[in-house]
Image (cartoon, rainbow, N blue to C red; front, side):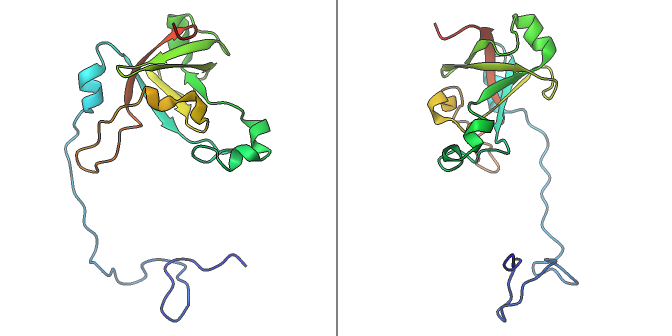
Length: 164
């Protein structure tokens, strides 16, 4: 048994499809907002030309407090920085080389992984290994509508080598 599918009615019956016939609040409430460039990019892109975005990978969850105690540690044992091949060439970065990732707030060292999974000008890493201290480079700017931190848009630069 897989449990009950939310929402569960007062009678204890689950609902396989959320809305079937009526919407409790009407047809929905949508808002349109014109695109506005992130203040992180506006303030920092001249000095830090790359955009760092962070996310998760399949093998670990958040800071890895549970998944790093499992066999998943043998599958993924570090956060790496995905770098587009053209960007890597321009910066003299090779696969598995150590790179400095730095922003207006700080810098860290991590291993580069050359990948066409990221677009030119975009860098990607996960945040499953807190000892890397990825938040040294992220900022405290929030989206003005959602108030969420902009962890997906961090103006950074990279250089081959370790911290100086």
